[in-house]
Image (cartoon, helix red, strand yellow):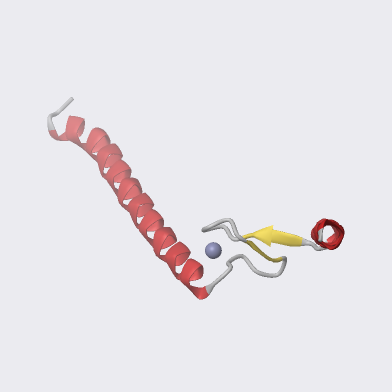
Length: 80
Ligand SMILES: [Zn+2]
């Protein structure tokens, strides 16, 4: 029955249009506006990824600081 099917499709479009929603930042599925993730699984994987990222950032900051200190100190040690 195409008529009922069309009506359902239109209704779902209408609902979609007026329903405020966001998308899961991990997998992109639609979630409620108050949520960032569609499931605990996505929340966990995001947290894991975030942790890994911040760890990498910390390491690169430490490396940069060490390099700057070396650049500042090494010439003095060499009597320049
Ligand atoms: Zn998700």
